[in-house]
Image (tube, rainbow, N blue to C red; front, side):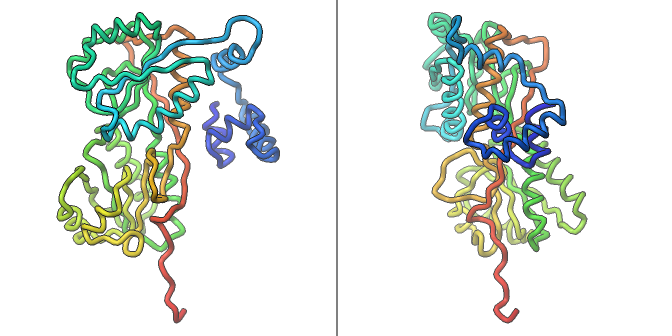
Length: 342
């Protein structure tokens, strides 16, 4: 039994459950009591390794848990992958600091650090854990001695099947999206996938997309569209004119100006929902926000691995931890205007 199970039972986020079970004052007492009752009913037991981390951090007796970790970024700091990862990284560092760990960033673009040199620097600094950033990894990084470190990645960066991963739960996110749309008078949903979306993520998204359509026979399933960064608007315009979606579900944020150049008016003509929102924006998108939960989950997972001296093991498949986001209704989704004669 996990906090996620409790969250689903109570209809709240896993972050709310986490705070409530720690009796945090930021959660209303009534909600805390309700969550505690559900946790007891479901037989929830806290993870002992996390309890150990917390007690070592807060106890005045004995030495607190402490460690040094690295975030290794394959691309420059101002690149799109690094900027997308920045929000998760911010919350990761905050949680790591709370757990007693210091964090250092390393950007290895342009061959700045060769594998042997990078490993030497990490050893010298006593770094035990590594979080892998987002982006395209150079082939030479495969020579890095991963077996010396505890390593956490996301499905966007895969340097080996045995590296543990934390990923957005796209099945859960699609379910949330469809449930929110159930009360609206639309039945033509189109989905947009990005060209930098990993193949396994595409399979998860499309699997959930078609499964939700199967459960709702009245909906019209439209062919997915693959969006390429920097592409001219004509392709998107052709897809839209051919299939006429009333709702577009985009895997990631796409600037509304791109839709405008393709002759698509959001939200006057078509509703826009974003499946995974992990970047700051002046536009309040309707969709599923990963918020702080992704970064915090990565931090807790990596701290647990360091605490138990669990390093990269090439002979096993890595553990996969899913994170559920939170639905928010923003500017890009709204009810159709009613006829003034009604």
